[in-house]
Image (cartoon, rainbow, N blue to C red; front, side):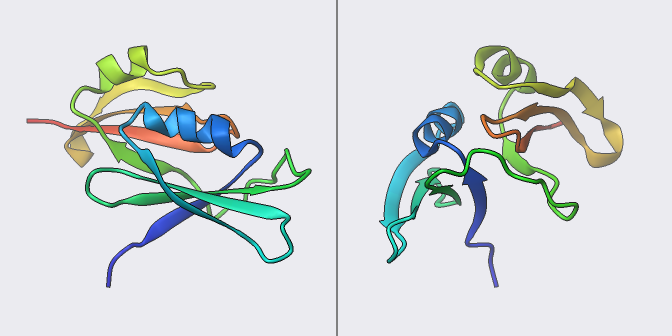
Length: 122
């Protein structure tokens, strides 16, 4: 068994695609629901990990569920990526997490989804 993708409801798929491109994701494919109301666009990294960005016509605000927390993206240098990317809010600045063996930071994407940046510690 393996994880296929994570689906995020977004207000503007194009803006979200640009956000995730900063981490090396590229648009891979898309489809529209039969009723034409929802466009699903996918971005994938070089290893094939996908994020589905689901844009439904007229929906721009979403209630975040309590079961959803964040998407984690592995990076080589948390501090450099944190400073370089155009994020939409800081949840937690870079810091060491010795128990997890990583340096992490948390930012928001255009729709307020939390994205964790993870750099393995030596």
